[in-house]
Length: 79
Image (tube, rainbow, N blue to C red):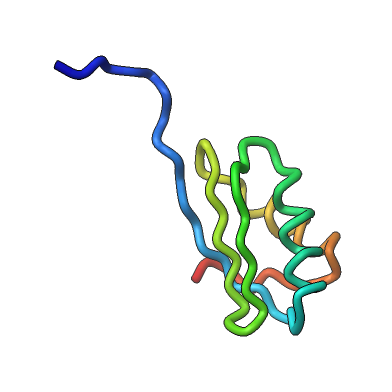
């Protein structure tokens, strides 16, 4: 018998970000997004322009956009 917990399942979202071209870019984007409340991991890949975010709950896309803007890049949308 398994115990039921009220811990929500993590949510994974993939975003497309334009302008990333190197590891420094990946770090800048990852660093800004990881500061958002509820984010547990961020993996940015410059080669594909994809940023995979795992969080406790779905993130507000405008908050993600603001974080990407702060890093100096443009959020294209969900992948």
